[in-house]
Length: 215
Image: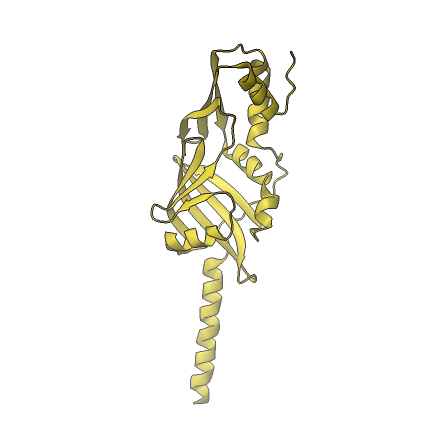
């Protein structure tokens, strides 16, 4: 009887250790001294001077390329919001047209774990669409429905469609600005199209990017 009890306790300890190993972070990322920037700042640097010179009834396109490092810089600039939801860090990796997100957190506020999402990114109606293809908690595959429920409690201002495993993140832009030709290869490439029909739209765009409109 005593031997059976000892064996049972031993097996329970082994099982718990195995679970902790399986859910622990798979990839470790250095807390790089990356520059914390926003997408708006990246766009502003390229667009603002051209916008101030645009006349009414004119249009212009700007092309952008975001590398994996650029994406992680943008994420780093928003980590304060994520940490308030008990997500310790988030990193992304771009591989063969797919984007992997690694979110370090703790299960039961105790055990280090890593939620891994294998996703497709697209843009529709100026909203970033994150389609979850596969999900893992550490090394363990998990149901996408579990992930959607988990993210509902961790994210704000996003639309979550559980049936299609789609997360829609609105991108706030002036009415005259649209995102076009969004593609993911070994980097993210997209165009910003501006179609100005009035002086008020020029003023709105310039002020949105933090500039001053000079009459």
